[in-house]
Image (cartoon, rainbow, N blue to C red; front, side, top):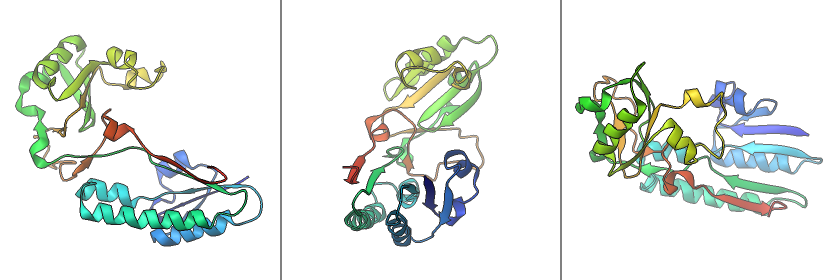
Length: 235
């Protein structure tokens, strides 16, 4: 079966594309409407095939301006029209699925939490990783993950879920089973935002990520529920 992937030209040859689209013929197309035209032409070809079409515009706008912005809504309406037109062009035996990888939450600047301003939260913490709405705290050798978790619960429990690695795994945060190879990569303590907040290190001179309005990474329904629409033979 011939496999094709359609996306922005800048993604061709990237590490992520190689990881998730390995084996597919990549077709770089800049215009959103032209990407759908290319997909329609490919799907109309004789014989079986699998075509992946990636729309990056909504994600980019959500991060830069928020999903509640007029720009995001306008782009969604454009996408809706393109999908409807594409679905009408599907021939017999041809189907399409539309889905996404995550949702998004708009976080105002007033929702930025600078955890470095509370030194007790970093006591026993060697490194902080993850995302602004899902911190992974890696404890220092000999430090108690449970003690770190309790300090974070006392300070942030009203607006975030706080769990040790074991607690998060038992609660199904990472699915029904966490592979032994994967488990050590997970933070010893996890802090998952449940309100419109994001955690940052105020000591970061680059202010990394703080210019983004749309955020994701936590386990709220707004971030974890995604659509699945079926068209044509996939309906």
